Amino acid sequence: MRKRHVTASAFLVMVLVAAGCAGQSPPVAGELLLPNVYVTAYSWFDNTPAGSPAISHPVLHQTAGGTGTYEDPVTVAVGHSLETGEDVLDIPAGTKIYVPSVRRYFIVEDTCGDGPSPEDGPCHSGAEEFGDASLWIDLWIGGEGERAALARSCAKAITGVHTVILNPGGNYLVASGAGVIHEDSCDADYGNTVITK
Image (cartoon, rainbow, N blue to C red; front, side, top):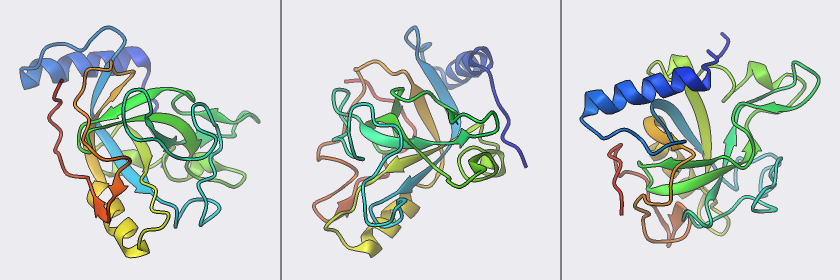
C-alpha cells in the first residue's frame, strides 16, 4: 500500500482545522501542527548498521544524537524514495520537528528503510494503517551503554499516533535530561498537549 502524499497546503488546512477543533490558537507562521503522525523510535541496537549511530543525511550532527533542545535537536529518520533515481526524503534534511509526547525537538538527519526500493517500506509507506496517520517519523533514542531491553521498551512506549509540529518555533517546553533515554530511564509519555515555555 502506498503512502498518501499530502501537500503543504493540505497540511496547513489540517493544521487550522485541528487548532480550531481543539480550541487552540492557530500555529505561528511557518509551523505545521500535524495531529495524526505515526511516531516510532530506533536505537543504537536496531540502527543500520546495528550497534552504531550512523546517519544518512548529516546536518547538525555527524552521527545520530542531540539533547532535544531547540539549539541541539535529536536526530529523526524519515521515509525516502529512490523511484526517480535520486534519494528524495519525505521531509527535507535539516527540518526541525517538535514532538510533545517526548517534549523534545528533533532534526531530520536520517532515513528509515534501506535497500533498492525504500519507498516500499517503513516510514515512506504504511502510515495510514496506524490510526489513519498521514506521516511516519522514527525518533532516535540512543541507547549506547544502556540495556537493549530498555531501548526496546522505550521504543514501544513512544510508538503510536501523536501530534507533532513541523518547523516549530523555539518556545515549546523541553523535558530535562539529555536525549530520550538517559539515566537508565525512558522519558516518553507526556501526551499530545502542546505546552509553551
